[in-house]
Image (tube, rainbow, N blue to C red; front, side, top):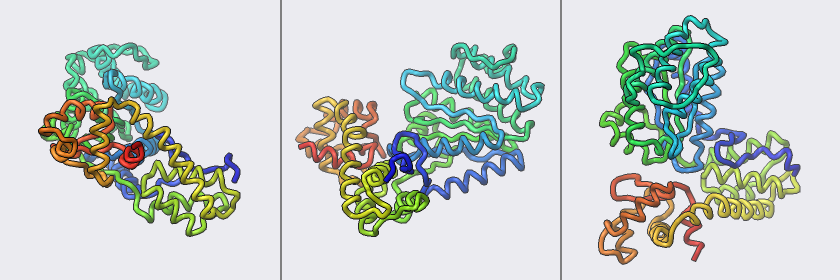
Length: 393
């Protein structure tokens, strides 16, 4: 098959040809969008959680495109260690504000632009240009305290978009990488928005690993009641079939049922691996019907690609002591994502207590290789990593 016409797109943040299994989420966002656009009334913000490769970043990108097409003011950012979140927010929000000055009456944006200028100055986020001369708004977002200044910015942003007849969408990817202070500031600002009557039309979507809800709750005790938490899991067989079959049909090709069965079993509902399998089978098939042999070759190539890229790089980042813990986690777990109790890991490793694993455990969490789905439990952040580790010995 012609690789130029290959519809499958594995990769971080790349939009697959079919967003299978996410219709409910998009339908719910459409309700939020209409409520904001037609009534000028906001809704409860979302936190999307899931393991690596289940499509959180892709979904955030789709929500951003929907809002941008509706004329909203949109800020989409990714939290990175060592980079203040306020700086990332200011940079991406400034881009949307510059566009807003060309679409809307500048007089209706004066207050917002002034508050934004105060925000950037008070938090020393660097030079951020808006394309217009504006003075900081005295008394707004000028305390130097992130929670206070972010709240001021979000409230004025919400008030402004309501007057403009649109909405504001703030999208924060990799939110689990934010500091406790940054998480607390975000929740404080959204809490203030939610207390307005009617709720201001500013909607926030945060995304991160499954540990994110507990991190937010630790930063703010009311966070668990503030957001809607939407967990993104691996795909059902029906949705996995759609992800592999529909893009192929649209390019006048098809799967033999036995070949499709082999590919589905290999991917096990993991969205990222489905794309890798689809791409490899397409590129190595004579077509237009994908055979069992095509699927066998494709799955082997896809697995080698995932092993070399997704898994090997993570394994190489671990120290010998950390690898010992990862091996125990792989052997004691069943790969279903529920995790293993740390004291059971200690027992399997011959350690006197769970506390003996606290150092490698914390280091692996900081590296993003594992997370704690609940207190005293450890799990991998990437589906299938357990099998890769088992194969190392």
